Image 1 (cartoon, one colour):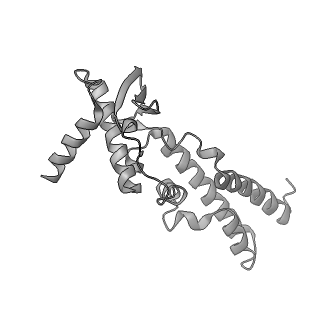
Image 2 (cartoon, one colour; image 1 turned 60 degrees about the horizontal axis):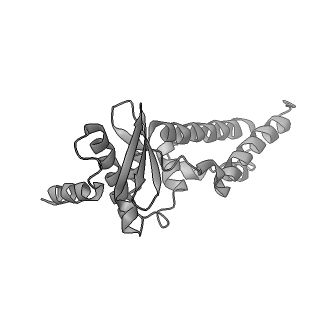
Length: 190
């Protein structure tokens, strides 16, 4: 019963602009799912609703952290390792060391929420070009979606601007600095 009520609410959020076009209905539904997940602060659900490029970005950055962690472990004395591992954000990845964990650590649950403006929750129009879509709300906000490998439409919400966040800039700078410093310390000279 709860799921049926949620589906009815989701369809109401979509507005009338998607009516009749199955692709636009899918994108409208994906938008509504993102809004619900934002409202609830559900990071796992937001990860599932995130596009392949964003997931690949976080997985790639997590791999860089894990590679740097291995370099630190293999190259530096044990008493120097904690400082270096802290600098590369190793603790952000938990035990698994994956992109999902990095996403959950970077996206501040306390700061995510759905839009307050009710017009930002209603679809005005959707423009689809191949495997990319731009959804515009009645408030004028835009959200980009892309078609995933599994055929579902996923949000690019978290990829836009992620690299400009001060914490991400610092993390990437630290990864580069640690790689350089370790190579100098072990006599590689690069």
